[in-house]
Image 1 (cartoon, rainbow, N blue to C red):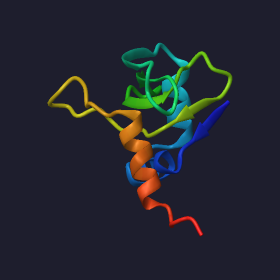
Image 2 (image 1 turned 90 degrees about the vertical axis):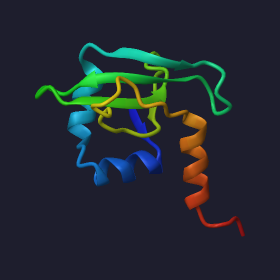
Image 3 (image 1 turned 180 degrees about the horizontal axis):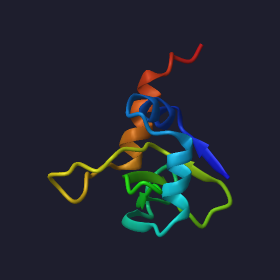
Length: 103
């Protein structure tokens, strides 16, 4: 089961990445290219996967072995470098900055 952060939903729309493409990228041969076992929001990682059309996607998310996979954000890797460094804490902090203040 997939669960999306608000940031992931916003970015998938802005980047024209469909839920179907995300599912394809996470079902095939995935590679965990960065590991964040001590992230303050819980263990997570950066996954590289491919859609059926060959589109590469980076997916920072909770560990794929968990029953509910939380997608933190999603993007196409920058072609000029093999990895784009994104920490889950920085993404979640950005989500909180976009939220209205607590009443």
